[in-house]
Image (cartoon, rainbow, N blue to C red; front, side):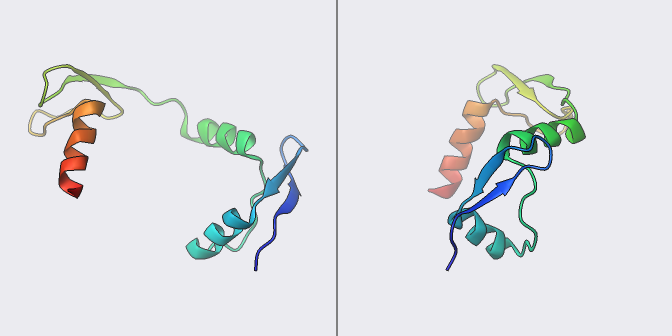
Length: 94
């Protein structure tokens, strides 16, 4: 149904491939427009819009190690380091 398409990035002018799989994904999400930027320019554009995130340090509620998080921790909610958070997610899914 879908075939790879070669598109031209509106930022850098380089060609990039809009794969059949990507087209299928776009359709499943209800997107009607094709991407206008290559992956590198899309990432650069996202970072420009989002800006750099300020990271905050907190103590991991599970292991006591240092956790760096993109939000200001609150005293009433536990914060977990990446490793402990991943372990908790694995246990939830099991």
